[in-house]
Image 1: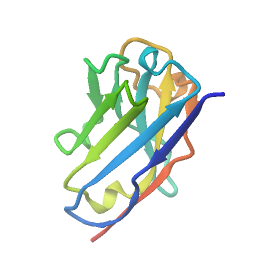
Image 2: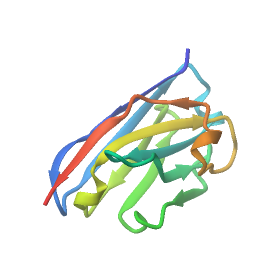
Image 3: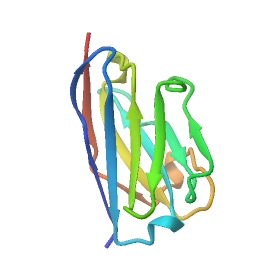
Image 4: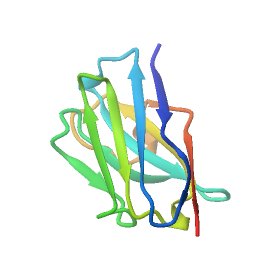
Length: 124
C-alpha cells in the first residue's frame, strides 16, 4: 500500500523559512516523479514544484521561483520542499504527490497518489 506522509508545516512569521518533508512507502521511490501542491482556503489546489525521479529536473510555479526549492533523497524515500522568504499568501495546506514517471509532472490530475497534507500558516 502506497503511503505519502507530509511533515514540517507550522505557523511562521512572514520572511521565515520552513522545510517540508514527504516520506514515501510502499513504492520503489526512485521510479516515481514527485510534486508539491498547495490549497488555500476557498481556492483550488495549485501546482508548487515538481522533481523528476532522478532529481535531475525540477519545475516551479512562477509564484514560488527563487524562494522554494524541491529536492529528494532516494536513499531515504523522501522528497523535500525548502520554503524561504515566506509570505502570508503562501498560507495553505501543502500536499505531496507521486507519479510513476521519469520526468517532471506539473498537472495535478496526472498524479497517482497523494498525501494528507501539512498546514503552513504565515502571519504578517
